[in-house]
Amino acid sequence: MIEIGIIGCGTMGAGIAQIAAQNGHPVIVVDLEAAALEKARTQLSISMQKLVDKHKLSAEDAAQIQARIHWTTNYEDLTNASLVIEAIVENLEVKKKVFVQLEKVCSTDCVLASNTSSLSITSIAAACLHPDRVIGIHFFNPAPLMELVEIIPALQTAPSYTASARKLIDQWKKKTVLVKDTPGFIVNRVARPYYSEALRIHEEGVPIQDIDFAMKEYGGFRMGPFELMDLIGHDVNYTVTETVWKSFYFDPRYTPSFVQKRLVEASWLGRKSNKGFYIYPQEANSLVISSSAEVLKSICDRIVIMLINEAAHALFMGTASKEDLDLAMTKGVNYPKGLLQWADEKGIQVCVNALDALYAIYHEDRYRCSPLLRQMAQNNQNFY
Image (cartoon, rainbow, N blue to C red; front, side):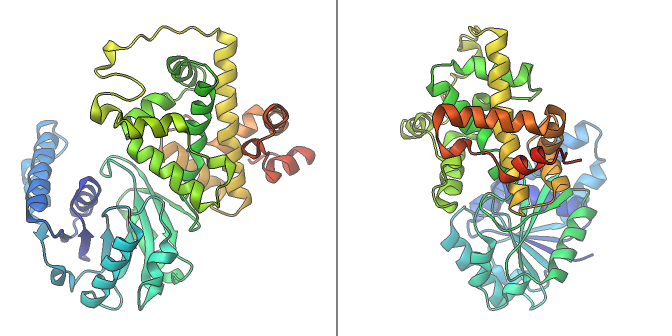
């Protein structure tokens, strides 16, 4: 069984280590902070005991999983690793330095992967002497529970490494999608309108609880956009939006919201600070819905249409296949159905008409219809 290296023992790093160990691999977790390693080791022990208590693991299996993981502050312990996954802070320069360090200690055929959620894999690979073995393997939080993993080859990645990385993660019982190295990959790009259009509607005077209710009641989403932003944390959610916006050369489709920026400036970050769009515990909020059913349905339709448009544009630009785009949104962020499937159900022409109506009102490029949707409407085509 091949040895797996993990760089960073935060929530993501520790979660990926747990997955690898549960699948029988010896795992080396490297973090320069000994206290962080001890904290992660303790947290894993607690997690394993919970699985034992729920009869999802035997005590013997839990002990064996923990025994497979070696916690260390030394990069040199990675000399026998066949795959190393970096899961540290979202800072490109810091990641580049880590990959330079990895090349000094890892074998020449070891695959070097980053768990980045939005940074350029190509830029990370460019820092390496052997960029052909660098790839993105993006897990979602919490990694042991979330099925989706985005596989992102850099411009320099050799196809053989892409194939072997995807095969391995598939063997870990994950659902992998192959993604072009573009800002936000699939999920963090295509999901932007769920937040940004909800924020725009709120800026126009609609209460947040109405918008959240509309998306759950009429769209079938598990959480409304404002509940979800509070859960993710506004520091994280705003930064991802801003990163995607800048990376796409300030495309208006991804423009961040001043409303959310002010929350970050006030350190009202959501659940983690007990205050965001809502106050926590949530029982303290007034959740009276003031909008009519007709208005609520129109809110849901507007946000879903914007999501569909983003998914269609991602397909048009070759970001991923239609199947992988839909799989990513259902498995990565638990959408009730794939967005391109949803487009077929609504009708492609209906989607085009809705986008054109929004553009007619606002005359903003954020509402421009994807050329693919327009072409398909003209040719009376469906995605499936």
